[in-house]
Image (cartoon, rainbow, N blue to C red):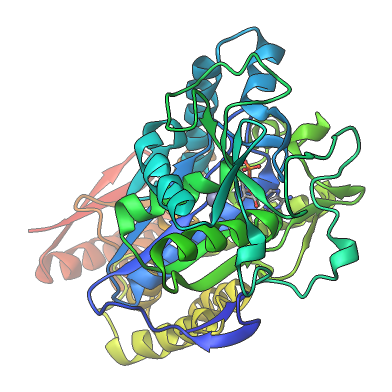
Length: 483
Ligand code: AMP
Ligand code: ZN
């Protein structure tokens, strides 16, 4: 499989460090508000990556943090803790809003068929890990204490910028509107590992530490949680593109300085979902959520389908019109699958392998989900039987996560009920199997009855019985079983 590695800025063959396990880490949500559908674009694409790795036979251990402390309003450690702001907004405690929005996040994930990672760890549960890392960084001179806080000293590194070739003058990090620069920093990009002093003294959650009572910085949590569950090395680290700098850059700085060796091999960044008026952001107040899509009558999986139609390394523009198109195409796809006959022949392995080959080629190519969706449409057009088509669709959907077979079964049942209600003739098999030949004979018998040719109708019934099929009339149709 080829993956684009943002650290090398190249497409690379994916080779895990260990033959028996792929170690994968994903930056989780900051739970001070609902996730917006932009955040969820990142989680959908990461979910596809995890599921595809499993599809190709890898064992995956995926870890995700929940940021419930330390993420300040500026990613570069200035301003107020976002959790505290959220708690004040809602007149609740930090822990109450953390629980509320963590549950809301996983509800959204469930609606979007995003699998829960193997390990989900809140930042507040790993304070000892951070203290262990920071203590060593202090001992080895990578960190310093100033103005009550512990900072990582970026001047100690030979190479700090990993993901971009920044120009120094462009790096006025953290200095965003309304946010004052921290004068304790020795270098502009130094970042906080442990806070004991903040301009916002009402920080709710604090822990004892060798540097005083305080709380961890945002970046240290991902290094600490990753090392706790995945050890000293990592195959793939994922996140949205805004995480590349400073968050992931700082994670690398502190992890590699602590470990004394290279840490993570592949960095996967998902480009943003933007609205026609710009980037979607939680702090801007108004943003799109999964619940809002539902209120407006959209199926959350139509949004997943919309995301799959474009490549994760291109930014994606959301508009209601685009979502309408995606929902229309998704429903059509389900209707086409519903029209397939579940027991049409036996599995044609050669045809299946050919279709599967196209599907894999798409995802092996740096997770090209839009070509993988094309491979799904190719299944419908393929010269093979419906049993093979349905097997391929079921297999591919294990990765794509569009609930295609489940939704097609519901659709099939709806159609059957509609036909019944409209007085149409329906054929039901008692065992649930479908057989085109038997159904054709039953229809021919029905035609004969309509034409009052009862001799022919009886002849067909006898012929079916001779083949071991018993037909019984029911209101608006016939049912059959094997005897
Ligand atoms: P947060 O909850 O703010 O910590 O962000 C959770 C995840 O969503 C991170 O991986 C971010 O990089 C990612 N993210 C934030 N905004 C967007 C966006 N507009 N489109 C895609 N991903 C985003
Ligand atoms: Zn992180």
